[in-house]
Image: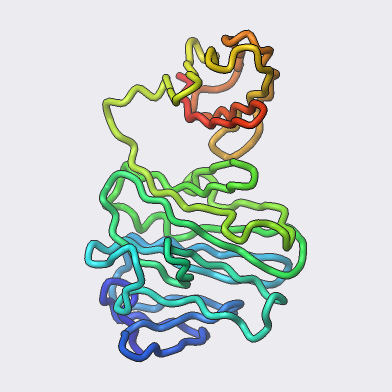
Length: 273
């Protein structure tokens, strides 16, 4: 069988279950597939392959850039996510759009600046789950593109290009739509040594940080700094003064600063040089 999922390429998915949807050209992938090898006579570009694994159980999905696609379901490019007959005994890994449609293969246009895609994971048992990414090298036409995985439960965002695996602790009570995949192009001319939001400022100076939170002066809080791999490199108490210097003693690089106050949280991306 030939599928037109990837930009009209003659693609065959091996050992996967499919459903022909009347009136469309889409094929749907079943969950907990044993393999998801893609065989094609043409080179594939701009295709991100994500695989989730808990114990010996796996499930997989694909995200693909195509200027001819839309943000909704396209019968010519996308594939629905089916519910396994095994139910919650196997992982359910998918992307989901604004209308709640679940995808095993999600194709959409990329405007060249930033795109965020909601991603869900479910299973009926607790355990450690690993999400791994491949296909990152296929985005060669976007040399400034960053591909990030955001865990909204922990508010940790990692670069999949730097760390293509992310392991997290899962319980069945977690929000199914816990994750986001973010595609973002680094824009030249923006000084990322200073990150500003509505209520707080974060500056870098001589590889240290200055945190300004005058709008929240009088409130104590916490600042947690993560590196691009999601590792916690430093946690400090914000004393309520409205302005605080944080000695980093860290290597140059990009860090995420999570500011937590009672009922209010901000996360900043900052570069130490």
